[in-house]
Image (cartoon, rainbow, N blue to C red; front, side, top):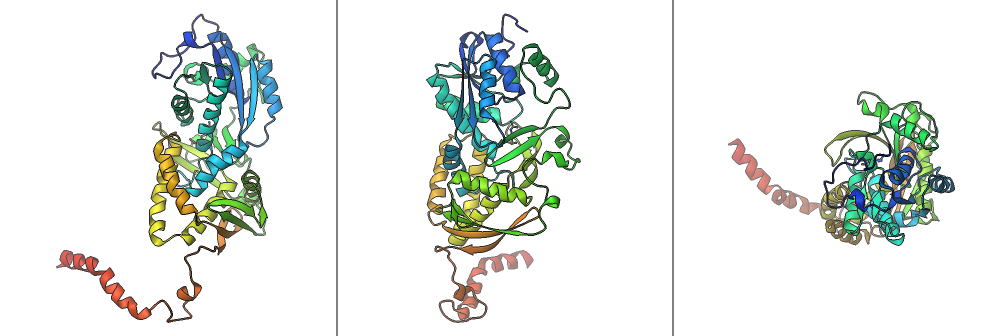
Length: 420
Ligand code: ARG
């Protein structure tokens, strides 16, 4: 493959690297096939040095020492692993919880929240190790390229990016052949292409294979995190989540750091088959794509948070905030984490969440998580006012007819005009 010029398409954007200027590359390295082939390919095609960076956002079952060793074995100048779980939880997931962040009705945005942090760390490491270029393994059809390149271009205008998977003309077969030829270990061999997986603390996505056939219901083997609801325990389980200022701080009365709390919630939710989402998504690059998500922690924490928020907010706040929540989720989905509107919205989210303190109990059973108890010192709730068993007190039932007369006045006039 070693032609004298890299097999790259001409530059379209100002932040794309000109092959002549690529000398040392910071590669976002996962240890998988694409980025392993990329690690060799960049050295060969660009005659450049490669520094690898692997970011731990809580993806289960990774052996980071093995990934590190593989990078060095494949010729990386350096290989670094950063454990960014605490930062991910406090700076990305906590704001997402405060914003009840879901895209398209169901996707809790775990990948979308992780990419700006991964790309920010890429910028830090690229600067620290004197790299001129950042390389990533995203394809040209997804949202992740947007999130990563937008972040690098925003935070580090001096850096350039390359996305080899977008420009090289290798399919999976050719990548495997390239790997064999260059002594890159390929796990799992050459049988059918696996699902395309991405995961972190907040959830896991699967794409590809039969998922692309809309009439095809999920096959059991796609669920690697959440127990299938039909195989979940026959007994329900109650879980209590306690929040302070909009952030979960305790599970079943035990105080935990956010990372540990999310892991514990994921474990319980997964056991009960909670958090499976089968969704057609409107990608920002125009495609509609089906994803299967498993997000057991989000499936407990988000509904509990939202319930508590509704309890402590007025009807007006409750009418308004979902509009901003949706905008927040869209910006994050769409790769605009660094957009000032997002921090403007966060200011509002923080303000509302000042009062979101209390506990919510959920009952988990065969794929469902249902709110069953609520408690908050800030609840705008007075049992004696709401009660059917009492009259009088602060709430005057005698005032209700007058209220109804004025409340319905314009609607009644409009009705009459239209029906005369
Ligand atoms: N569709 C989701 C998103 O756009 C998940 C993407 C998963 N990424 C991946 N490289 N497999 O955020």
